[in-house]
Image 1 (cartoon, one colour):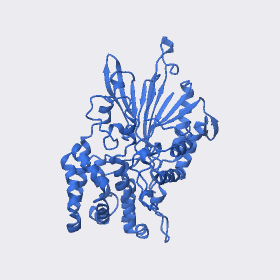
Image 2: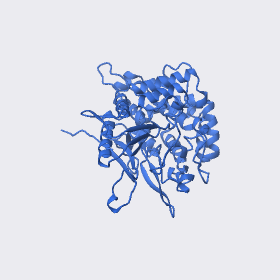
Image 3: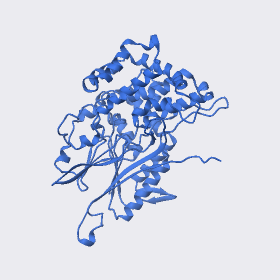
Image 4: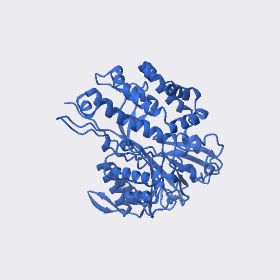
Length: 470
């Protein structure tokens, strides 16, 4: 029995929470799922193991379990301005200690701590179902780093810390970048290999993708690291610094806008981002009011980013690969510093945002790149399982005399913000996805016909809770 999950994105949230004060409630948003979700998941696996007479279970965490990038700790108590976008081989003592600090802060988030405890208990062959019980079959846990937890593979001390957190076997040897399970015909990757903004090599022009991608490609930082840290995580920090905690607590508009900044990276599709920030349904807060609160934050962000050599290097690189007009919009704005003279009108801000996000439409879907994997083309493996996109999917990527081959996207375990077709309305759902494979000696479905089979079960769902009006 092989189970694969990915993109749990356990995060440090405390530094973004505005505490209560002056008789006013705190302002906080939790991106971490409650531990009961993972306990229920483990309980379900126990029941499935019994029902299908499984012999043993391998549970794979396929990357982005610990989100080292999405935290404002990179801007707080960070006197020497450490940043995570360095090569894994270049992590020095100062950065190692800071990464360990972030991992430790993630672990002490209440729901994260309980969730990790549930996985450590599972690693011991136990689980919680009102009382502690023995898991019905032997369990082995595995971990592959993703792009948001790339740096956990940088030093022995950090790897050991992560192993202890999840209950993983081993000492301090490097984590693998992929796993194979020949009996089930499965290859597992994180999936950022198929995203040129979050992987150091652009594999999209290649006709085939090798089974063994060089380790060095996984060590390099990417533009996605920079965008997450110095844009997505920085904006809420700048908003809070500019408006102040007391003012945000008192002003309903500022409270609402701040919470939107904390959750906007859960939005799908991301091209709806600007509308999500400025259109707040059900509140008497129009786009112009929102933009007046946001505009000075964007000025501050641009002032701090305009001379950043790392950003300049990446923009030059992307200019050769991405839509020319998209990069030109960004580079021209940074060069002219036009916001100092005339500000940024709401319409222009929306145009720039739409242009940047539209540039990502050039990125081929992950399934198209997965179909180029040599192990898929040769039919050595039947399934290529990966996460990263947060878009759960099962797609046929090859079918010929060698049989069917599939790309399976393991989605995410976190909040999901869907948009209406016109991008003017937004909702909130809690997402969870996992895939289970059974080997030929476990699935007894066709034993009566004298044949052995293997099987795959894909589970994808959403949950939602809401208040009932009196």
